Image (cartoon, rainbow, N blue to C red; front, top):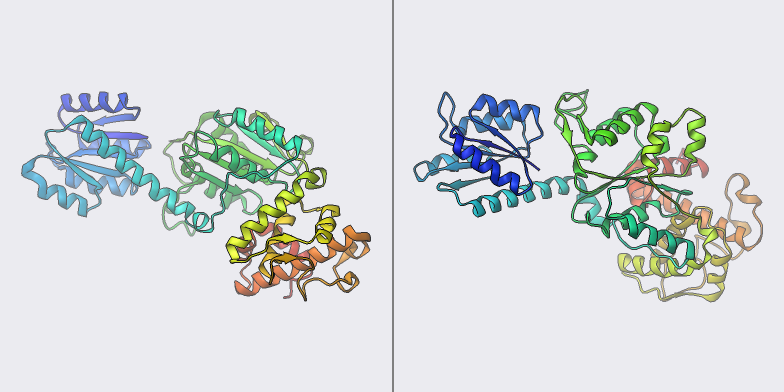
Length: 458
């Protein structure tokens, strides 16, 4: 965190600078309003301590207005004597966060600064995490009994408290984001933000804005300053999903940030410094993408400091039953249901199914059957969504060609998924972004499934 001390007395500036640097803050000083404005415009300042009585054309109250115009999110604490309390109160009406009376006690000043910075950090965090916190999306749980997965978790435990960049590889739905959350929420960064973004769902321009933020007026529609994911993740973890879908131009900018730990907002010139732990994920072979010219080799070597390859669910059958039980408990709580078990016959069928959509497919399946359940045991699929005679279930393309018990479960699960998509689209008024959030998938994934099930005209 960076602090600016504005006072026209050199002794006070020096003493406060030593105090805050010793407390671990990056500290700047200014003796007058022009110096203060220059620092705020050129440096990333989080909080300013402003003496109300400054010699010259402007006092601290007038300077506050100019500083807030240059940096609207700047936290300002006014320093005042007993004779100018009214001015301090007026400053707070004009945007100051707090004030402190002279003579200044060091411990009291440090406490005020710490509390105000914490409040500002909470406000920034709330802007991004409100929806995620309400929906309780983030978890440190990683359910597994598979020996290979347990080894991966042990490896994750060894590196989670470092700043090493992590590359997670594996098929879609294998749990890459869940592992990223596990690494963050069990590490020494857990008090800071875990911020995720799917690189496949945004255009190049929007992805740049999401990653780095933008200044007001940077492009058409940029009506106000926006903080980027790197700023929101400062001190914590930034998770970049489907990084192979990122354009080469954006890859170059990302490489620069990794190398310098600094960047500029879109349309801005101020260098912003961050301390972010980067975790990236892909379902593609990045080395092959490099050969095709679609991924930068220098970026690959930067992000591949520590790699994890998550096996598909079909190769970890030990995890199916624990995951079934975990998701049943989760959706029981979410939907106020009382499902206790799955019949042995159905459990056997689910164990024999290959789960091409991996853990995500299993989770969606349990979501649907628990939602529609009426008793404590799931022994058959709910009426209307799946039938014992699976020949009645029709899906496009080669889905019809599957045979055997595994194929039957696949067709039934597909029909459940189709109806769940239709329900989400209906509830959101055909808003695909909102429907994707409701279903817990990316907009790109939803679009692919809409095409797969021929739902474009629905």
